[in-house]
Image: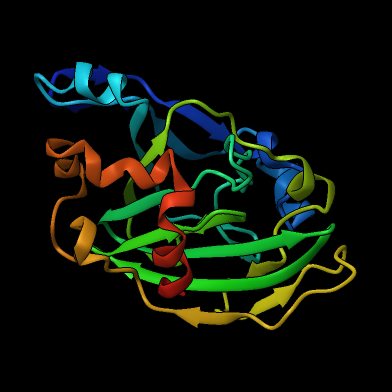
Length: 240
């Protein structure tokens, strides 16, 4: 199957995440044993439309698209591996912003402090809706539907994801079962009750439901929060 993505001026082959790449974080080990070569999702990194490459790179940004086909990993819905972000130079970790382009997503956010999870948030988002990953939160994306999930993200291009704690603890704080139930990961010493939050809208920086998030690059100042989160602490504190 040809999985090449054409986006604006770019033809991009995906980085493929196989089940065996996620062996530590998949709940149903019996399914995993039989499906190690299963392709779970596809990551298309560093995309741009005609004329935008220079401004994106000059501002230290990256626009990605991830495609997650509908799949049940045994008793668990398909999900991303999950990761945290490193700290910026001013002590907060880098934030990230997602938009659902097609399908439906569950974004599971968890805040870690002093080696303990202090907060867990579930955001349910549909086409055109956005989810902001605030500083100091890790996150996992789940496709809980029968449709392909296609989502985009803007992020500072100057960091690598941190998988360690989520891999060491065999997954995120919660697993979403195909029954729709969320169960706690028994490898964590303490897990707070999950709270649900709505997709985010931040009109002051043009993050609005139904508006194509890619177009924020037309005014790169609107994306400054990704690289300089300290300046936007009041916004982060108000959204969830």
